[in-house]
Amino acid sequence: MLKTLLAYEENVQHHAIMSLREDSLTIELTTKDVEKVTEIDKEYAKFADQVFKDVVMSPDDVRSSTRM
Image (cartoon, rainbow, N blue to C red; front, side, top):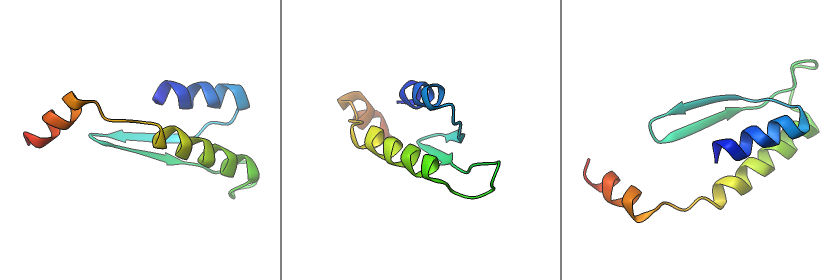
């Protein structure tokens, strides 16, 4: 999933700030030149939402998360 987002960034030449912590990923989007959210930020967000909707946890992931 991260590779997909990074490839998207390279393709559109628009880069987010990403923070990965344990089981969560935070993506910060803003266009620095204008210091506000622009249409390209919104398109990136829609793409990221679609990527994460397509993510499915494997049975191994489910088993390891229930052991905690």
